[in-house]
Structures are given as structure tokens and as C-alpha cells.
Length: 232
Image (cartoon, rainbow, N blue to C red; front, side, top):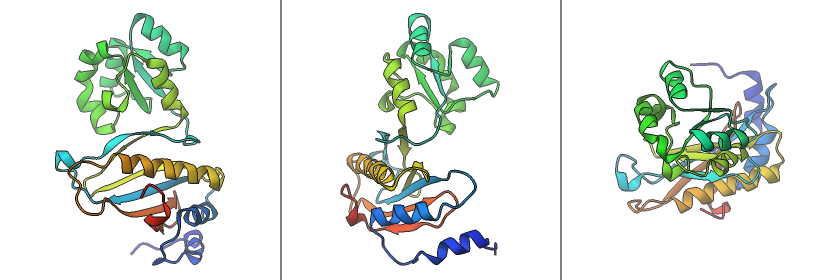
């Protein structure tokens, strides 16, 4: 059995494993327990009453967190001519077409979000086996296949979070950094939970949002009472 380090032992001293904290208190404790030498991410995880193996129970979408994520997002854009120039002017980190596709095929993926204009999807579609497993495949439902590249780039860099439920019905995301104020993290957490609530699929039965937990990257998980989150 793996040993628990001294820092994590100390963090667990202030956490009751069986207690359901209200969201605000859980965030305050997660911040307090973020004692690593780097700016830890504050994360939220939710157990949903869905089975994503069924198409009518898939939960997927995007949400723009009001205070961003605290992360620098590198954006690649597939575009040509005027749209390529627009993407560059909007702050895209990488802009290209066939050259970008070749680089990706050769294993160079130096970006966190991929956007494409609709006319480029014939080319981008060939990269599905590479981009798909990494969650980088442009998708019109997520706003990453669009003629409005300026807005898509702005949203990506402003803290837009993409979410997709995993096989076990779990969905999670970073909602900011430990250096954020508790109020900022609370706003972001509520925005995320609200987006998940609104994305409830038609096939979901019974209790949809079953469990919520908050933690820092290196800290213990804190169970949250779903009743203290307005969207739940």
C-alpha cells in the first residue's frame, strides 16, 4: 500500500471524510489545503446518474467560466486566406491548413484547443484518429467548427471549458487556481454545475447529479452537499 506523505497527512487533518460540506466551505478548505510549491488547480468532480454507453445519456458541452481557468490556452486554427488572417489577428497561436495537418500527422501537437472553419473540415476530418482521442477534434456542437474564428479564439482563451462524461458517469474539470479568491472559485464552480444541469440528457433517469467533490491538485477530496449548489 502506498504511503501517504506528511503534507497530505496534514491536509487530511482538517477534513472529515464522511462530512458533506456546503460548496463554499469545500472550496475554502480546498484552497487552504493547496500547499504545494506550485499554483495548484482547484478541481470539481461530479457523479451523474447516466450511462454514456447509450447515446441518449451522453453529457457533453462547453461552459465559459466567469473568471477563467487561470491556465494559458494555446489555440490552433485551421483556416485559409482571409479567415487565416482573422485568426492571426485574434491571437491564435498556430494558423495553418495542409501544413498544420502534416505537422499533426507527424506528431507535433503543440496546442490545447483546435478550431476550424467549416470549409476546412474535409482536411481536418482525416485527423480524427489523432485529434479525437485527445479531445481536440473540432466540433460544431462545441463551437470549434465555425466561420466566426475571432469569437471562438476569444472564448477559448477567456476560460471556456469543454466537458464530456466518462464511462463511469463521472465528469470533472478545473475551475481555477488556488491563487484565485474563494468568491471567484465559487462563481466558477456554480457556472460549471449549472452547465452540467442544463446538459441533462433526455435518457437520464432518477437522480441526475448524485455526488459532487472538490479538491486541489495535490489535496484530499471534499464531499459537497448537492443541495448547497443552486443548479443541483
